[in-house]
Length: 101
Image 1 (cartoon, rainbow, N blue to C red):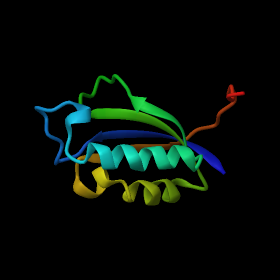
Image 2: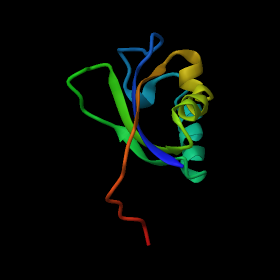
Image 3: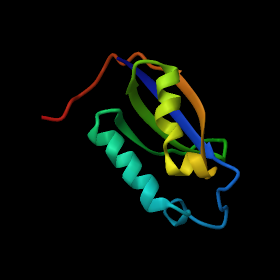
């Protein structure tokens, strides 16, 4: 398995007058992400500040390859409905990691 740095961005259906947790299908999106954490596919993730206002989050993902990352996120209710999109999926060599005890 490999690690990837995944950057997400607002999709065409993102409602700009609403906060992240006020977007349609928030509960479904959160449940989906929680399952990926439970499965060990998401290592960590969350909203990130960026010079590009359209960027939403940065997520560390473990998967066999870039195509697998895209396949996993294709099932996200927000991605399916156009609220969120993947901006970047970049291979990430992790040299330092503190695991929970």
